Image: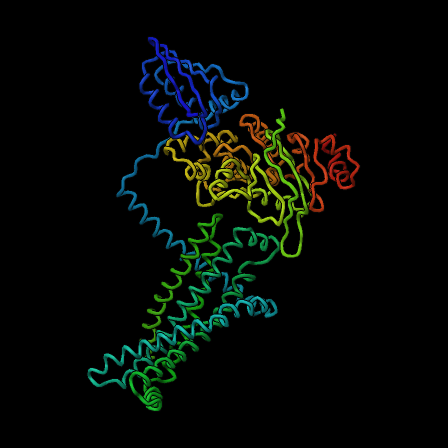
Length: 376
Length: 254
């Protein structure tokens, strides 16, 4: 049976009879019906709503009846509800109390002001995150000095666990991607250098590029994506579940227990991965030079020996631990910034990866200027 | 006030994981319009039973009938129609953390019914007010709400579609005694005004005494007793004796 509301009007007296099931399933048609009646009989002054013939009514139906009587009341009419069964009276009374608070509409915002507001907030947030980085760096320095004074306090088990995860388990993917990068650089070099017969200088280019810049950058991008994000998510969910507060109340310093082993593991792992990555890239380049460029392996090696020095290799390796520190700091800061919601965890993990890759590139730029200044 | 029609009828339900059997041919009835308190020791499988009834866990054997239809025999669409007739309040509230309180309550309405945004918002607010929250919580995220408020918003969400049955998993755990008493009273009021059948997993002896019409006890994978609180108090079963007439049980009665 369909839900319906039939009206009969005599002068200013309106009689409404509700029939059928006034339930959630029919709420859409009932809403139209109720709005239509409220609009059509706006001039009625005394309204009786008979609910005695209802089959069933739930909160949706009860609210629509209430909305109708409020619409009439807004014109100064009086509404009576009759024929209500005892079982439904409680529901009607309950619904009558709801939706009374005035809805405060959001004040209209000037879009230009909103734009400025957004920019300002973003800048303040960047400043804030730099301050937090400095805080954590300070706390980490303090804890490191304390640990140097009492080496037994270093959590070796935890450090080894993280070293395995961020170092050893990263070996295959790091080796594979740097191998491919080396091969691609060599192929591109040969293809273009061939036009003016300078193929042999491809070895110089690959050697210097891989050892100084690309090796360490690729490794850092992989580590930030693989391990930085994992650090942020771990610390963030620990924070959400109050585990970090629990550590604090037991007298432990979360920086010493959680941050130090993670960052030490990164500082050990990233240089090792960088070395491995550089070797894999050179191997990839050598394969391409031999198979694609038709260069004898002996020539590749002797050319490489002339092109690079221990210094070239050192520049790349010196950068690695600093990059590791940046990735670790950013990951831990973002982890501690996670708030209660799942969305916040996701946002912070994304921010951790984006910020650490960005800062790694910025740091790489500064170090390039530094090495140029000291003539390396 | 008890109608004798059964809302939920569970027969010989067996549930287990890997090698262990949690429920072993458990049978239970929930009558329409009653509040059934479901008790048992920690780890006895109360939540497992509730989750099996609502279809979150697979069963090994047995039948679960809701309003006389066997859930196993239903196709996807019919099952969804039945699912719309029940609401579930999870132990931790399980509010969606990326939605505000009001959006949490609106969510099932918006997804299941094709209503105007205005009506959806009005119904959601009405539900929030019916569970005793005022309009100021509507824009707050779950992380900004207290434990008691989270439970109330979760109850409002469970009631969003005007269900016939509500499952409550330890609704008063984590609430202070005043908050717990208010929540009990709220469940009682809502049960009367909306004509609900309530399946309430609980450890709260006060709730069992004040709001439950009937109590079912789960132990060793079976329902070992079901009946009024007086029946439980009179029973000579050792587990029931220590549960209802132990140190804490006595304190509640006096």
